[in-house]
Image: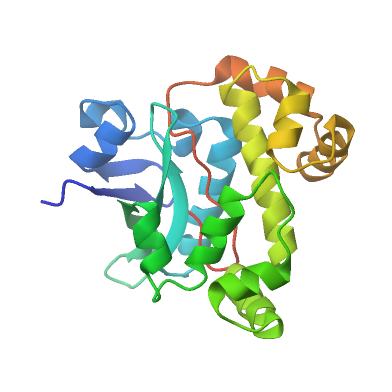
Amino acid sequence: MLPDVQAWIKDAKRRYLWVNRTFLLNYGMHGLTEVLGKTDDDLSPAHLATHFREGDEAVLAGQTVQGRLELVGRFDHTASWCFTTKRPVRDAKNRIIGTAGITRALDATQIDQRDDIRLGVVISLMTRSLDKPVTNAAMARKAGMSVRAFERSFVREYGVPPQQYLKRLRIQTACRLLVDTREAIAAIAQRCGFADQSHLTREFRRITGLTPSTYREKYAAVNIPSPAAFVLSSRRSKR
């Protein structure tokens, strides 16, 4: 038994068939009956469930996630960096009928020291620097690479250029703050690296189709105790 590892199995409709004790504790649950048959749409706010659903669809299409660095939250609205592995579940005829996954939390020191986790230190840098500009050159230096090599590696690993990923991270962080707090939208804009509330509103509407205030009204009222983290979309893997 590994007390720090969450594990789960889902069917092809993304319904949980089994989870371990650590998963239950992370979600603030006490027994399997609280989660069996449910999906992330039942367990998480809409802005999180969307990313989880996209990840399930990628794995159901035959992709495999191996040691993926991602940010995962808890029922108490804290979050930690985790390494996640997910694989398709196949039947006797080799047809994909579900997904199985595990994730294990690491501390920031471990993340920065793990040379075998590609670009993990850059993602950590982005997360710590949401309120200030971060150039590709600075990220390349952090990864110990040339700018060109860094940009190529990042697109290959995450499916989007570094600055696009950073903007998505800022928007997703704003989503979480809008749902989980009553902080003023102008303050959220500043915390997430936007010039002002108008700048956040323009980018937020372009990506989500909603204004920040509408998003808050739509999702905050239905928010339930659940992980307050997000997993960034990528070409290869998502939670």
